[in-house]
Image (tube, rainbow, N blue to C red; front, side, top):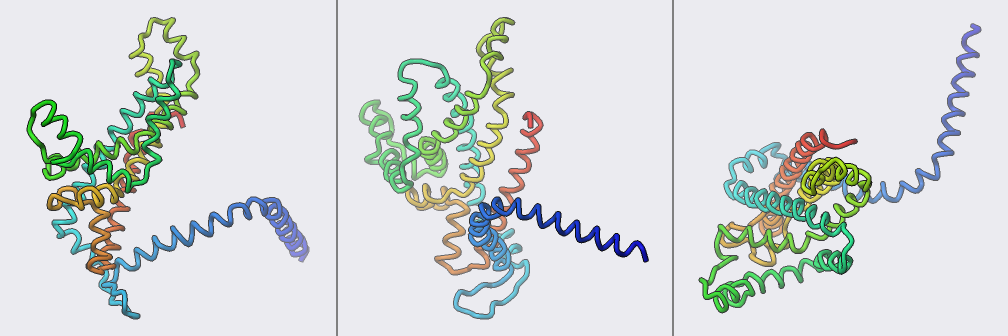
Length: 309
């Protein structure tokens, strides 16, 4: 009988303490609330809705949809076009990310040093990133066009070489799009690498120089290990972005020649809005998301062990 009042009193004190802590955190929660609302409405809800739709033979005009379970995923495994466009997308993403990471780090390392015109070069390298993808499509067409392109003008008119169908050859169309995309997106990785390099204390390089290390040894033994967290961030974000490539091949090549530059998101778009197979398109999006998550986890496993966090 004597334990009951003590237990009740303890419960009341816990409630008061919880309420007091809640009131302290209330301003923080109110700041988070708008972002959480838009995050839930425009990200979480579409994700779960897409998962749901992928399990149906979804017809846009019907009120009651036909549940088919995993049939869309089974059909996707047998879809030769999907595997072809997935290969194109992976090839594009791997090439673009590799060049952006390596070139971005090397250029950032060069632009870290103080020399005349450094700030101008920083702006110059970042400037293409402010262009819209429509402008990029026009520029890419003018560069790679077989008859009127700038590249072929130099090859044929000036150097007397053959006229190459850069966008009409399945073997050169993806590399052409990669070069165009790297020119467009290169500025962001360079800028992030530059910020990371600025945070490395100069004392490390001075100590290495006193010990007799040359520039290459300082770069590989000091810069690379200390810049690894930044490299992980850039690699993951760039991979996720370029696995969703759509506008460049859609505007410049329309996915041609044949399916040579057709990507997963282009295939998804056509499936949903050209053939109105929303269930199948949702299954494509789910598989693409799973692939990106698996690769992201692998990248974290590989690179995180070499970071200091």
